[in-house]
Length: 165
Image (cartoon, rainbow, N blue to C red; front, side, top):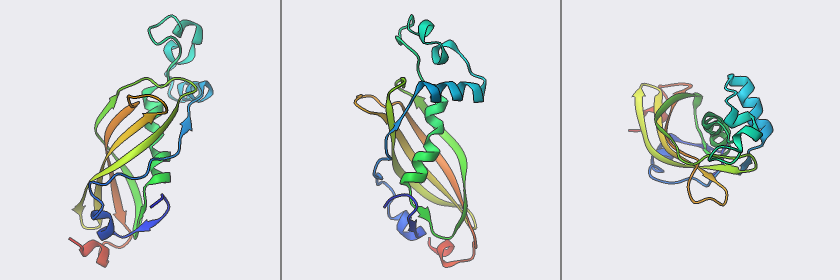
């Protein structure tokens, strides 16, 4: 089920353990890396100075790990279904993030999402836990792996959707 599609809470809970179709590929350009460096004030040479970065073991510039991590929002919106009756989803944070392989300009990345758990945190608040793997096209090792938590706030916590448990 592609992102943007609506799914009920009961159907979502039945998908625990399942892996979604991957997101589309996103090509990482030096321009993206430079813009991220400016936005975050992280202008370390390994990201923005191709000549100097060429002298490192990386052999050239690499994307910020946080740039790759920040693309999860786009990939999730494209891939994950919308929970029916949800007022909003909140990025709750990460239990674990590992930057496994550097992403270089010209690399393309995409995400795979595996739903680990759906649990009621409070009336009308549902915590979703995903394992996320960001792959690099034509590479064996992923760019990153993470355990991502999001909190779905239901528009009406007293609906039947809330009472499923």
